[in-house]
Image (cartoon, rainbow, N blue to C red; front, side, top):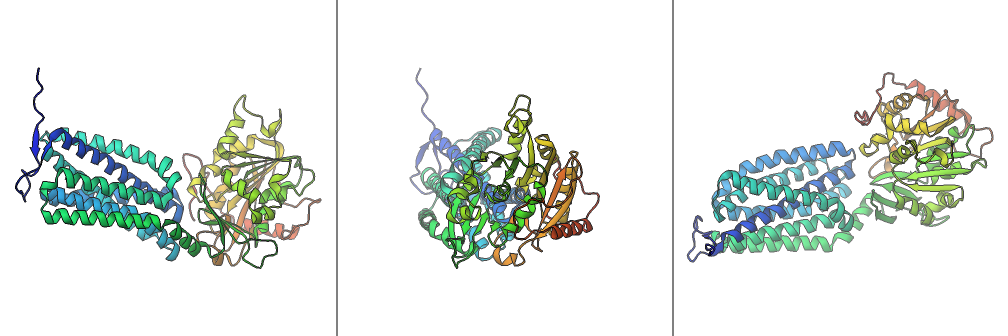
Length: 555
């Protein structure tokens, strides 16, 4: 049997311009080209969305809020774009070419523009909303135009056309959603990844219009689209060439001129400024994680002395440090000769490597990570504790029937969404299981004055697992705002304070060990005053935070 001839369609037949000598394209080829374009455009569109969510979370924190704002605004804008595209279907090929050129330019340059606003202007909230609206409108305009174009290639019932388009769209979204975290972000970074996505977008969109639907365009329109696509590619290529100097300039604008280390790990961006040499007259060392100042050599000892030493009263042979990859809490722990083993559980192994190898940071932590009593575990604290609580799992403390005498929770601020599970009832239940009967737990609970609701929620959550607590706080850097481009050191509040909770099965006495090393800032009198001030600010009735009902906010 002889196959019937492949149907041919003149894509100029329904063109308002209808130039003579139409290009004849096999319907199967045209249909495949349209669906392939839908696939690529969907992948690019989702990359733009995820890029905005990642940037919003990185620049402003609270990933749940930022993701909700960006995605809700974009979905609304996509609906608006679909409605606006109804008026463009008469010139569908021309309109689609313009939309793709604009989308490639706006989406591809969005990361660089947002980072520039953050570095030189500070507030990026409305800029992110603006980009979400613009990208959403352009993405929303794609499907109605592509629906018109695929019907011009080969007429079919509306339901079948919708099914084909949405199948290609959803599969493309899957590929884009997986490519962003597993390929683009780790291999190219946020800026270059967005620019490359824009380049793919404009090439594929332009190729469809200028090849399959070229006879739908007048010579002037074809020339305009070729010039526009070339200009967009040129701009994106220029941005790619300038990515490194741009990042350097923006980083200096954010962190100052003394940046020594800037790396993107699998977990976060790590930046170290100052502290270049012993006795240097330059700026003191500062460690930033995702734009937040976590350590300042000017007064980090206030934080770490307050976290560690009240918990060292009593047995302290086995110590567990959750977080603390910078080695500074560890430095204070190792000042006690009675300490036999210390386990440090840190998610970001590259922070640990920097704490070992960076001259300024290793000098600040007194090379604590090289001590033979120290064992570093590179793992998520929640998952690591959970493994130790399972039947047949590794025993707490590393020995049969063992446990820890002291547990130090040196973790990011509880107001950050990514850290919410590390301040949950479930987490403290796991911590309690690895504590010996007379063990003590010290928790960094965020700023007592700056975010009192979050602080007292930590206190209530610790008490909910059967531990009794004593609150206290210490004053941090008074000139905090002069040193902080993106956030307070370890969650210090507007007044520059750090809040802590000391907990045990029986109500612990808040005091310093009698046989303690010399301390730079903390005294017995200061500790008693810190407790009195915390009790004076007590907010009764704070809720308990759980995994399914997190209670932390910014207030």
